[in-house]
Amino acid sequence: MGLGASELLLVLLVVLLLFGGKRLPDTARQLGRGISELRRSYIEIKREVTGPAKFNDAGKTPIKDKNASTASQSLGDSSESPPIAKHSQ
Image (cartoon, rainbow, N blue to C red; front, side):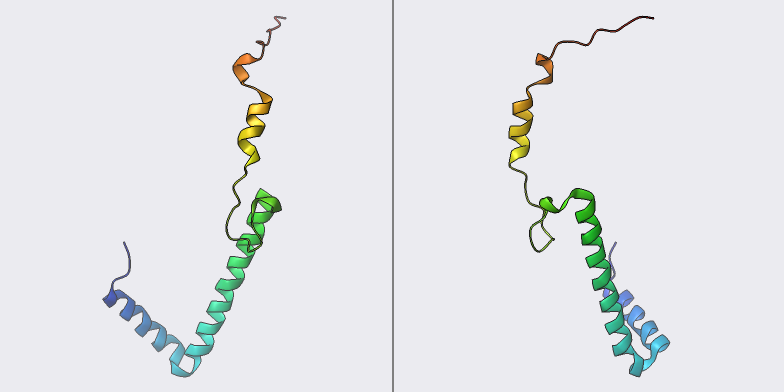
C-alpha cells in the first residue's frame, strides 16, 4: 500500500498551495532537520536501552555478540541441574 504517482502529485500540489512557493524550501529544510533530529534521538534512546557495547561507532548497526553462545555453554544445560524440591506447608 504505497503512494502512486498520482497520489504523490496531489500531495505535492496541496503542500505547494498551503505553504506557497517562497516558503516551501525553508519548510522542507526545517522538516529535514526535524527528521534528522528524530533519527538521532531514536538511536540514542536505543543505545541507552540495549547498552552502548551493542552498537558500532556509527550507532546504526548492531554488533553481533560472539560471547553469547559461549556464555550459555559455560553455564551448562538446564537439564543437568538437580530439580528443586517443593515444600508443603
